[in-house]
Amino acid sequence: MKWRPAEQLMVEYVALNLRRSDDLECRYAYGIGGTQALLEAWMASRVVHCICADNGEPLGVAGLNGSVIWLLGTDGLTATPQRRAALAVGGRRWTDMLLEESPLLENWVLAANVESVRWLRSMGFKIATPEPMGPSCQLFRHVWRER
Image 1 (cartoon, rainbow, N blue to C red):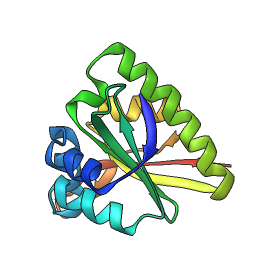
Image 2 (cartoon, rainbow, N blue to C red):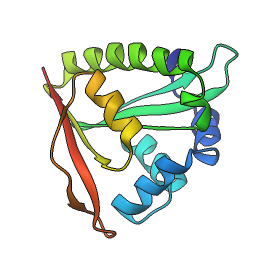
Image 3 (tube, helix red, strand yellow):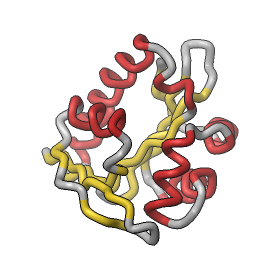
């Protein structure tokens, strides 16, 4: 996988092909669908990268808006053990780079999204106890990593 500066067509492709878990998380947290959430996050973020397969297919989009780090992806992002491993390595490098500019990276993750919680923990994020959040009052965990 390759991390590249995000271009509009890449972001739109990912937005239209989001995995169900990312769409649900956006609906529970913000009351809007994942497609709208991704497009809004892309426009509001100062750093945005597209995660692409070796053949160029967009698999995910990740960004930084203030101290809020985010990533939304397609099912292809974690479809194979090789992609999951590449995402862990690439994600760690990306967050290390972001920490050079920002002393704090943070977000909230749906507590039921065990795969994302495990991935964030592997990248050195601290994970808080679940608490209700958003219009749905679903359980979310605050996650953060500091310089």
